[in-house]
Amino acid sequence: MAEIIVVTSGKGGVGKTTSSASLAVGLAQAGKKVAVIDFDVGLRNLDLIMGCERRVVYDFINVVQGEASLKQALIKDKRYDSLYVLAASQTRDKDALTQEGVEKVLDGLGTEGFEYVVCDSPAGIEKGAHLAMYFADHAVVVVNPEVSSVRDSDRILGLLASKTRRAERGEGPITQHLLLTRYNPTRVEAGEMLSVKDVEEILGIKVVGVIPESENVLAASNAGVPVILDENSFAGQAYTDVVSRLLGQERPLRFIEVQKKGFLKRVFGG
Amino acid sequence: MNARVDTLEAACDLRFGQVGMACVRVRRADAAALCDELERRVRAAPQMFSRAAVVLDLSHLSALPDDGTVDALLEAIRSAGMLPVGLAYGTAATEELATRMGLPLIAKFRAAYEPVGGEAQPMPAAAAPVPAVSTAPAREPIHEESAAAHTAMRHAAGAVRSGQQVYARDRDLVVNAAVANGAEVIADGSIHVYGSLRGRAMAGAQGDTSARIYCTDFHAELVAIAGHYRVFEQIPADLEGQAVQCWLEGEKLLIARL
Image 1 (cartoon, each protein chain N blue to C red):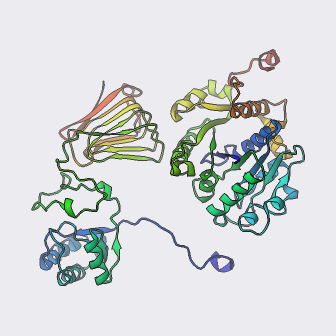
Image 2 (cartoon, chains in turn green, brown; image 1 turned 90 degrees about the horizontal axis):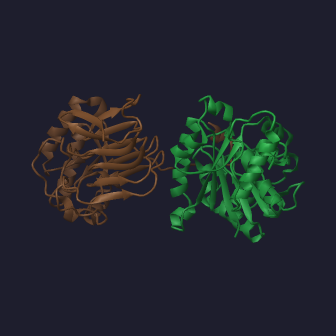
Image 3 (cartoon, each protein chain N blue to C red; image 1 turned 90 degrees about the vertical axis):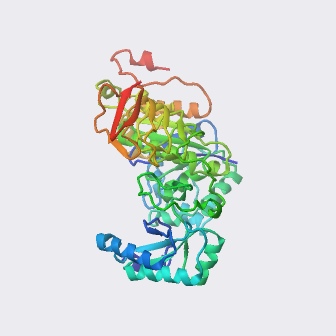
């Protein structure tokens, strides 16, 4: 069976799709066979970030409703042979998703030999978000260092502990990882932003990674290249660290201190 | 409506939702007295009660009345100006009665919040009803002691997250992690939080004025004991982040550092 990872947050605009794309690419770079699914039916974005928007023929809803096979709908990434994208439908709404349909697709991916399935959840706590998290084994909760985002993440953490198949079947809790994005150490130091410690304290769990606020993220998104592929950007390097941690390796937290000009390379070089 | 345009839509959706509905809990099978009483209520608050949908709850009668009496009770409610829409769930016998009357049986929402042995203290003392223990649904635990004896406690392991609610019925509540902003912890007895209390804590939910709230890191949005509450738009500097306890002295809710 494939390991199912949901990337979720509650709040919109915090970086779920950016994170889903980069994590999926990172896992593929590590040699895993990965599928990344856009659950945001009606507001599909993942294909843009992955740079495959012009190759979408069949989508997730077509497969759920039996109008296309999984093989027809999976879009192979141009950069990595083991990475596939399953796009959302832009013309339907979230009611087109059903629990049985989602289960069928995930089971299908398992039998196709996928090792990881990354589910990019829509914002909110309604049907789309619920179905994205329901079958997950791991959850990456994306949070910005800002009070409303932290509050929504708290709500999501509560739902992950109760409203998932693992919870309902008593199969042990889903593994929860907190991913802090859009982090700006300078603004944290100025007291304008919550610090890593504040967020960890409020939510009561440790972060799996901190992605610094970076201009490269926007540029990468617009270019359809997941930011993890931009090896010169701090955000890209931070995502690489997160993937390593998810695969069980130890990596120290980087990019959480204010940078001093001049010896950046020496400090952060490796 | 857009449902017209999109012909792929189903003809209807079946959705579950909760609606608040008044419950007429009959203490005596006396239709005339019931009509008088309800008429008074309707006159006093016509906006609230006139043509209000109500559910007839017979579970507090010592025995289920016969069909004729139930008909009379329903008629009494109607003539007082309310609209009975169903029977509240009691026993299998109530279910049969509802079938004979052609009325739906309506499950008691929030049944867990109602005491089995007696009323909450602020209610006026009425003729003590026969405790409904023997006729109550089997899943309700049977309490023989009074609600004031909080011997056991409920233990909530792990954090109480935003949007979650933990209720300790007839007992104390112990939480060994944080209670987040937007979370609610409620107990009929006292509440102990070994961690940050950032949400709402309500002790003595059934009116026990001796209940207390303790926490090791105080950031609460609201604390309440037996219905007396305080909200904290600004937490006093001498209490914020401190270990505190809250208790009731007369009508006053007091908070002090431990």
